[in-house]
Length: 391
Length: 218
Image (cartoon, rainbow over all chains, first blue to last red; front, top):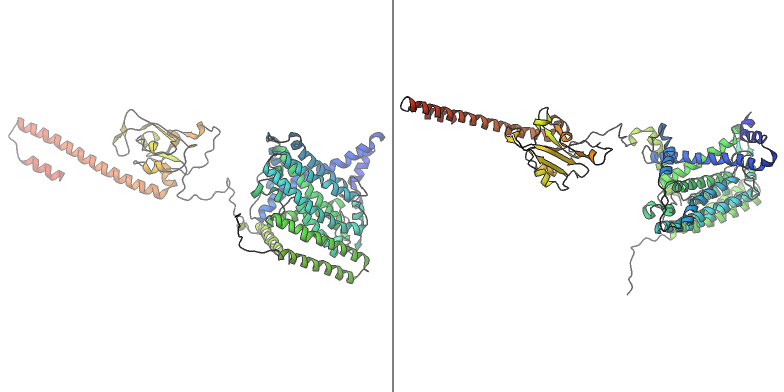
């Protein structure tokens, strides 16, 4: 029975496919796989917006939205109706075509990466053997659409926001990819499904997730920090810093196009979180061996919501970084640490199992973390700024 | 070590997050339409006209002197003086406003009209839920919408209204006394005239009347 519930969506799909004539099988299969994902994740987006506003409110000792519906759960509907009925204003000097295309490209790119995410056991749209590569390649299209939006709006704020976004996203793309390399090394595959399958075993009741190794936890933390920066969320929300450049690259957008940017941003966040789950948290696997009777997709979404809560928590806690802090952190701390982490993962792989490799790899990572953070701190030199004028 | 401050901050926000569910005192929000804070006594927003008694028609204290209209900085008051006169609060014959409009979309709540009014006829209201579907007519208040009773004034600003009432009562008492003595004087002079006329008609004048007059009037 648990297997039946676990595979219910797969079984339903096969049952429906039985009614489709042979010539239409491929396209019907694609539609039946894609449509549920395209419903589930925007729905998750709607739930997340209201949970985020309520959570942030509680962190600031406020109520948050509590008017629309029962405890404010209909707030996303109200927001959706509002953004649909608003006027769509395009600046007169904007590049009309690019301005129109930017949100579309962004949403398409954000949805495309869901093709390789294993949502449950046997539940993945396309099991590519280079799935991780596909994920990062398509994910970087978001940067293109950000710059399209910033450039085509013909506004200094949006251009500044787009420049910041490009600088930030490219800087953090590197630690993002390098920190995921350790999981690829350990699994020996670029396919997301086989990375999850490699972590699916248990020792006693404890799972074989990569996060329970020194290189895994380091990789996970680096990945999550880089993912926060990738999805332009607080404390890395400089591309849309309200106090400086109002809304950044999508300042000239209104109505539903604005909502599309919002949607794409959250979809990107879910996708990178799902990828972190896939790489380090065992994908859809249960956290204890005695909980395997609970369906796999439940575990996937439970992990996803936990990570989303972490995002909200961090957003409620930290102020925005400065540009130089952001760049220093990316290039002087995250990048070297993720490279050292790869070396650590290599040492782990070639040493015999036991406490020795735990000690060696942990020491390597902690030592380099301390030294790198001291290196970051050394550059702080507080002094009275003196101005020199041209004589 | 890198990240110490972040962990401290995360602990603080977590404490707030869970604390706000446990301890209701943390939530300082007053959920407005259902919950309201008591208004402080000095609250003021837009002017209204005070009337005595129960009927705003004759009871209006305003005598259409138009000082407020002239002093109003944004010129939001419009007064038309009446053609006839009627007795005011102290019984004196006065004009009254045939028309008294305040455009509260223009009013800036400066209270200058209240300060210049010599008759304590215009005061500041505390009513703030004045939204209207008609942005022009709905916000142009006429004499009847502006008129509010002295009891209402006593309810919203008790201290201020108390001193105003005391001053008015004093004025009225003074006016009443003056009116009485005047009436008496009038009556006496009339009586004296009548007596003199009678004396001329009948007998030579006696010396009683002047002493009596001085004794009574003091």
